[in-house]
Amino acid sequence: MHDGTAADIQARRIATLHAAFLAHPDRFRGRRPYPPALPAKVWINQPPTTLQNDTPPQTTQVV
Image 1: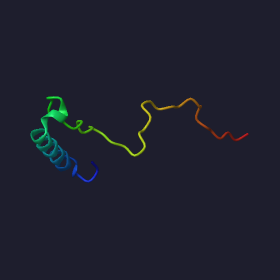
Image 2: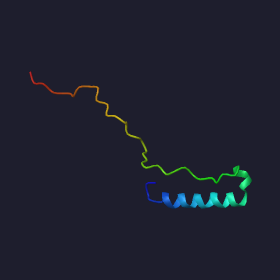
Image 3: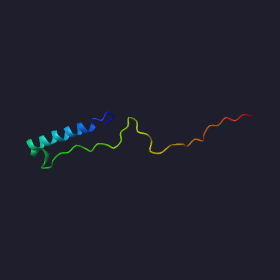
Image 4: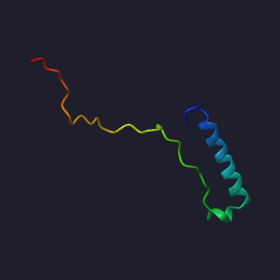
Protein backbone atom coordinates (compact mmCIF):
# COMPACT_ATOMS: atom_id res chain seq x y z
CA MET A 1 0.00 0.00 0.00
CA HIS A 2 2.72 2.45 0.97
CA ASP A 3 4.98 1.88 -2.01
CA GLY A 4 2.26 2.03 -4.68
CA THR A 5 2.24 -1.66 -5.62
CA ALA A 6 -1.12 -2.49 -4.02
CA ALA A 7 -3.12 -2.07 -7.24
CA ASP A 8 -0.75 -4.36 -9.17
CA ILE A 9 -0.83 -7.00 -6.44
CA GLN A 10 -4.64 -6.75 -6.29
CA ALA A 11 -4.84 -7.31 -10.07
CA ARG A 12 -2.63 -10.41 -9.79
CA ARG A 13 -4.82 -11.75 -6.98
CA ILE A 14 -7.93 -11.27 -9.11
CA ALA A 15 -6.29 -13.06 -12.05
CA THR A 16 -5.18 -15.95 -9.84
CA LEU A 17 -8.63 -16.36 -8.28
CA HIS A 18 -10.27 -16.16 -11.71
CA ALA A 19 -7.97 -18.91 -13.05
CA ALA A 20 -8.64 -21.09 -10.00
CA PHE A 21 -12.38 -20.61 -10.44
CA LEU A 22 -12.24 -21.58 -14.12
CA ALA A 23 -10.13 -24.65 -13.36
CA HIS A 24 -12.25 -25.88 -10.41
CA PRO A 25 -15.60 -24.07 -10.13
CA ASP A 26 -16.96 -26.78 -7.81
CA ARG A 27 -14.54 -25.63 -5.09
CA PHE A 28 -16.20 -22.22 -4.96
CA ARG A 29 -19.87 -23.29 -4.74
CA GLY A 30 -20.64 -21.63 -8.07
CA ARG A 31 -19.62 -18.13 -6.93
CA ARG A 32 -16.64 -16.37 -8.43
CA PRO A 33 -14.16 -15.47 -5.66
CA TYR A 34 -12.99 -11.90 -5.34
CA PRO A 35 -10.38 -10.52 -2.91
CA PRO A 36 -11.41 -7.88 -0.37
CA ALA A 37 -11.37 -4.28 -1.52
CA LEU A 38 -8.24 -2.25 -0.88
CA PRO A 39 -8.55 0.07 2.10
CA ALA A 40 -8.76 3.80 1.47
CA LYS A 41 -6.31 4.57 4.30
CA VAL A 42 -3.76 2.49 6.15
CA TRP A 43 -1.76 3.13 9.30
CA ILE A 44 0.95 1.46 11.28
CA ASN A 45 -0.60 2.91 14.43
CA GLN A 46 -4.08 4.24 13.74
CA PRO A 47 -4.61 7.69 15.22
CA PRO A 48 -7.45 8.09 17.69
CA THR A 49 -10.79 9.00 16.15
CA THR A 50 -11.21 11.95 18.52
CA LEU A 51 -8.64 14.15 20.15
CA GLN A 52 -8.45 13.35 23.81
CA ASN A 53 -7.82 16.58 25.68
CA ASP A 54 -9.21 15.77 29.13
CA THR A 55 -6.42 17.49 31.02
CA PRO A 56 -6.22 21.28 31.18
CA PRO A 57 -3.17 22.84 29.55
CA GLN A 58 -0.18 23.24 31.82
CA THR A 59 0.77 26.82 32.57
CA THR A 60 3.66 28.21 34.50
CA GLN A 61 2.78 30.88 37.02
CA VAL A 62 5.38 33.17 38.49
CA VAL A 63 4.54 34.13 42.08
